[in-house]
Amino acid sequence: MLTRALYFVTRHYGQAQGGLGLYEESLLPWLQRKGNIRQIEIKPLSIPRRLVSIAALMGTDLAAVAQNYPCRLDPVPEDAIVHLSNQNLALASLANRLPASIITVHDVIPYIHLPGHQPLSVAGGPVERLLIRINAIGIRRATRVVADSQCTKNDLIRSLHIASNKIDVIPLGLDHNLFRPMKVPREFCRRYGLRGDEQYILYVGSQEPRKNLRTLCAAVGKVVTTVPQARLLLVGRQGTPEQESSLARWIQEAGLAKRTRRIPFVPLPDLPLMYNISTVLAFPSWYEGFGMPPLEAMACGCPVVASNTSSIPEVVGDGGILVDPREVDAFAAALSRVLTDKNLRQELRTRGIARAKLFTWERTADETIKVYRKVMEQG
Image (tube, rainbow, N blue to C red):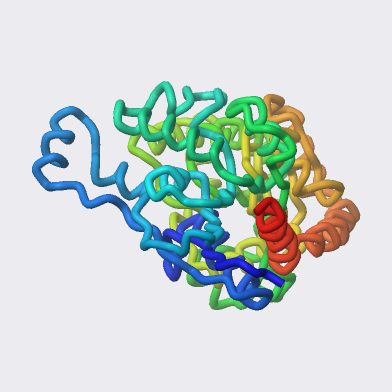
């Protein structure tokens, strides 16, 4: 029984945007089935146009920064418990003087060094750097912190110096009615220009440097020399001009110009079909706070070859093949094995489906309710 008013703070509810929006929209209905939990939307500060224009002359998009770090909340009762659904909302715990707050931290990317770029706390604009540092104070002052993975918990302890006993690890879930093995309709193939006689090495995600697409292209370039029917299938939004230029160069250098299919946008109902038509998911990311694509792929029966770094082994477990993301040859060898060994594919399919069943939004909700009770017991 939840005895205090409880508010779940969302930012994109009804307009899921990436993992953060998915978390809000998937978890909240399950929480509301289990208790009287109210949803409240957070809003950005209203920045005067004149100030936005002045900041633009200094190279800062102040309106975008305000959107990324919203902090305006409607008043809540003095004894309420407020659950902020992602780390970028931590400012609200300071700006609104919340009596008791829980913050879900999906990753600590702004505060750590990753291959290919500096942390945002060093490399961002002056306003963003300031907000990132203030945001860290908000995370530290939270009553409790929820982390998507043990990896994120370890990073919170190491980078933000948060006490271990203040952090609860609660893995994300998956919609198993959506992500499941299914037959791929011919109409789907026609719509996306895909063919049944080709073996697709699928990548789902962005072009951020931490995603390690250079290794992906180099590895697939080696694979196609021995598996000519292999194709690289890239699904994910377009990157910055610099990222697009780098990706085009890596594709060219790997000899994949005629063996790559790029699909910038796939609506959510079509995403499971992408996994089902693909022979293997390649996920060479350097760092993930959780990593949804490997979980989605396993649930669909698509074999997974992924990095053995950060939180990814926590998600994949024994359901896929884990490889050092620094080793192009090892990644290529793992992909080739999956493409050429039917028995291995079936084994990975079976293990992956079993592994994915461990991750449900109901379980995430049950564990989150336990955190709410801990805060209530703290008084």
